[in-house]
Structure formats: C-alpha cells, structure tokens
Length: 362
Figure 1 (tube, rainbow, N blue to C red):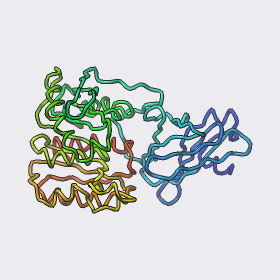
Figure 2 (figure 1 turned 120 degrees about the vertical axis):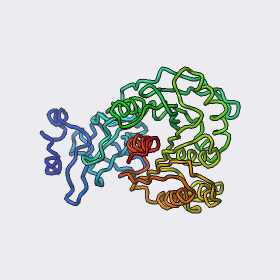
Figure 3 (figure 1 turned 30 degrees about the vertical axis):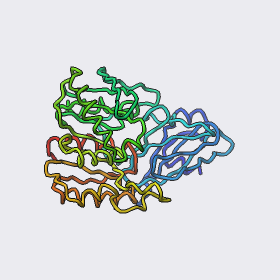
Figure 4 (figure 1 turned 90 degrees about the vertical axis):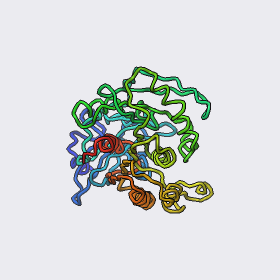
C-alpha cells in the first residue's frame, strides 16, 4: 500500500504531520488505459465517498492505525463529478479539496477534463455574490412567494431564464461565469433571470400553470424592474426535470421561447411513469416525444441538447426527442459531455449552448 501512496507523489508516511501538510484530495495518476486513478483522502474516522449520480458509494479504508482514510477510485477520461464525504449521519465537503459547490459538496475533475475557464473555483465555505436586483414574486397561479434575482451580464440583453435558479446562485457561480464569458467575447450580453423552484417534481412535470405564471406574472415584473431586458421572448436553460420543462414550454408556449439549452433533460417523464418500478422503463421519449409525433411547427426554435456520456439509460429517451425535434423544424445541436447527471458538468454546456442559441456560432 505504501507504493500506492508513492504513485501519487505524496511525501511522508500517511498520517504524519508532513503527509497531511502536503495532502490534497483527490490526487491523480494515469491508469495506463486512458483513464485515471483518483486517490481520495480523509482525516478522522470511518467515512464513505458519495458521488453525484455517477458511482455507488465508496467506503474509505484506514491506513494502519493512523487517522488516514483513503480510497482509490477508477475514473474515466475527462470526467468531472460532484461528491461529498459521509461520516456517520453527517455529510460534508472534502476539506482537502479547494473546489466546492455549496457547503457540503466538492468537485473532482480529472486532469484532462474539459476546461471551465469562466467558472471560478469556489470553496465550500465561500459565500457567492448575488445580483442586487431582487424581485418579490407572489404567484396566484402557483401559490406562495419567491425571490427572483435578475442580473444584466454585460449590461443586459436577451432574457435567459435559468430554471433551478437557486442552484445557480448558491452552489455554482453562474452570475460571475456569465459576466466572464461576456467580457471574453464568448457570449453576447444577456439578462439572467434566476427562477427558484419550490416543488420541482410538480412544477417541472409538463405543467402549464408554471409557464402561464412566468408569462403573465414574472415577466411583467422583470420588464418593470429597471434592469435592461429584451422581452417578451426569451431563452430557457434547464437541467434534468428543468430541461423537460423547458422543452414543454417551447412546444406549448411557442410565442414565449426562442431557444433552449437543455442539459440531461428528463425525457423519460410521462403521465404514467409514477406507477412504474423504474420510470426509465416507460416509452422512449415520454410525453415530449408523444407531443413531437404530432408534428408541431418548431421552425423558429433553436435548441441545444447535451447529455452525459455516463447517463446510459437517459440516452435512448434523449436521442429520440433530439431526432423528432429536428423533424419538427427546430434547429438542433446535439452534444455529449464526459459526465454523469451532474451540475458540475452542466456548467460547461450551459455557457456554450446559450451562446450557440443566441449567435449560431459553433
């Protein structure tokens, strides 16, 4: 086992002060077959690695009778993945990893993972800056009150509606990433609208009330808040169930949406999947594919689809919708990311695909 630690160029005996002073987690070594071996370290008591929708939990092993716990994990090329450590009933970010996503999540990126130059490395304890423009949205259609942040990246422009907006505000620094992309010329100026979800499963499940409320209640608030915004039509960015809802909006509210950025959209969803042991076993493409077979006119729509290479059971559902959307007249871009079902990887596709939707650049 000592040779294992030496392979990762970690000095000193595991568990010693010299070892911990130099330790970083994860450490990486090529596996000789095009992928990587990642060494995760933990100082303390027994713990388990918990990955985001990529791998089953991995228990850490103890080094002798020291306070050093470790796990070697086979990682495919180019992977970026979110994880946390669980010790007993507690979960936390990796204290040896400076790249976090909120208070209890960390991000591991293989050395050959696609770069994300506009996304600043944020520690688990860091507090992200928030857009100063905040709307109080009290919805009669949806019930309840929400805080919606609005940010004019580069001075503002076309509206980009970010579903699951709180994740992009508090876990991943989307505001500064869009600012950076605009400043670098990788994206035109846009006005970001961060829409929080109260009940994702209910609101994003092809529900017209959500989009009626956005159209009739939220967008008038955006128009009157003093932040420059090109309305009434907009680009919608959504992931997982949010990607499903974004595609539903384009189908049922065509006067509202000009473009979509859909990452890992949940196109397995349909009204009958709740009764299945595994909802992925429903008809390919779910409710969205059934609607697309009716041949709606999507000739004015630009839609970018991105799915992770490691989301095997999602792929047939997404591939069918991608094909049917193109047959319905949409201008379609299809990408595959070296990831699982994970917001850490969606970050790259988010900026790239919003830029393509707005400019048409490859």
